[in-house]
Amino acid sequence: MNRRHSFHSVKEPNADESGEPHRTIVLAVTGASGSILAVEMLRSLEADPRVGRIHLVVSPSALRVLAEETGASGRHELVEQLVGARSAKISLLAHEDIGASIASGSCPVDAMLVLPCSMGTLAGICHGMAGNLIERAADVCLKERRRLVLCVRETPLSLIHLNNMLTAAQAGATIFPVIPSFYNHPRTVADITRNYVHRILQHIGLPQPGAYQWGTAALAKDTK
Image (cartoon, rainbow, N blue to C red; front, side):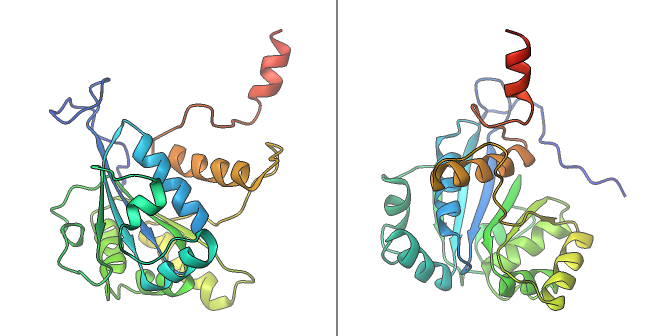
């Protein structure tokens, strides 16, 4: 079966300047370490004119990790805490609300990112548990053949973890481990975070201006 991952190219009323329809992205944040990646992703999506709607779901465990790693405090005004201001693009959905719009295949979604993805969430997704909104929305993406990117974060990995990744990949998810790159010579944690987020956005069809591309520096030198 051929899986279709490209975005529609038909011009729609809610479209960017190029005529492409605005993307709708689900960003799910779970309780693994690496919440700064989720914050960078949320800010990048909010700033991207090609993105029209962001459905944000944050698990209770993720709230605790956010507090410890970023200083964000609780769910009250969480979006404002993470991006620095209110955003008409971002809707914060309750983790327990399995009746939310993204729990149905009739809700149009272009991609779902689970960043970071804990091993518990991975297990729930790959076994179709659908016990909360993150698991249910991911299940919808799999059954509807939509992009689902699982940014798994754990080390070392047990055989259970590896088998769950294999099951999720066979079901159609992309396993995108939280592994930094160093060929771009990062100097700060922000450099590492930004490059990882850029790689994900490129993968779902939202390449970012200024994103590092291997070989471009050498090519620029050769053309001088």
